[in-house]
Length: 94
Ligand code: H2B
Image (cartoon, rainbow, N blue to C red):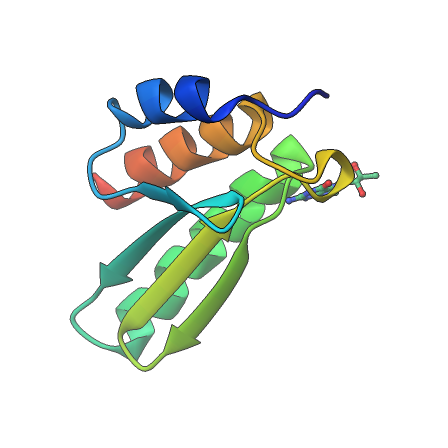
């Protein structure tokens, strides 16, 4: 899959509140009530990522979750990253 140009990335980010493009990836930071809520959400995201065969780079500290999405094979952001980002938004949206 071919990596997207910056202009296309910025345009597609308009549908993703709270996400930004930097360092060749799209990122968001999430905050939860506590560690259990954060980890439960990570588990839900993990199952969907596995279905999509596309995986986040993320860090979790207590109730925070920092997510970066890029396509390692393409060395940049592709449609796969936007698909997973929208899935993550559906999961956290309830
Ligand atoms: N996830 C991400 N973020 N980038 C990839 O290039 C990637 C992946 N490659 N998950 C996938 C797995 C690939 O290794 C398998 C074979 O589909």
